Image (cartoon, rainbow, N blue to C red):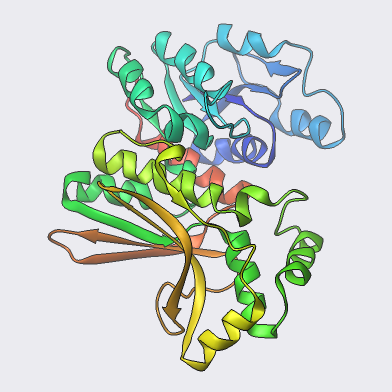
Length: 315
């Protein structure tokens, strides 16, 4: 398929870089100010070299992306809350043009799910968004294969930064601020880690899961969210004395979304370490399904995007 990619950060660049391995052509790649557009396929390697080198990705305007001949719009711009713009409008334009859209951007799916589905219902195109929840981990496709109606709950660890911090605090007896600084030095935490440590990032993912289970009805404001910033090292020490540890656990059901620090047994499946993510999918007929892996990163998330592209029907 012909891909038009909006967003040239780690995920967008990785999608462009890997698309050829999946048998797809990249006809456009845009950041917030410039675009490379060629209906016969852009020179991906050259475009990526320019972007990484601090140059403009191309000479076209980002608006030109919508005028080129593409099959799938890949929405990989930064996540925004509330109105989820400009990501929502990007997807809207693709669907109104009867094109497919695959999202790595969590905002539109978490904040405006019903509107997305309504647009999809009127379009020849479809939306998919595996990459919005857990990076490379096939969470949404597992739910899809099980059918959402047969899933009663999804719970787990879906933020690698918070998990890294809690793992290091427990293993080394270090305090939160010390480990956060270490995580930032290693590139595990952003310069502004607020969304990760206050639970917002994980909450967005579990809101998306609740929307899938319930066919809509949830937004971030409906979630009960608590972060890890106020957990003292002594709490982890006390938990360890009882054979337990603390993890930032989220849960999505048809009744709502909760995210917060929880005590879990040290040998529990939920006690994953480092930046790994894990989810438990509770089903009516197949019991508890566990899936784990790297929940973030450019190439990892790009594999989820490209797997979604592979599931789309021809237009």
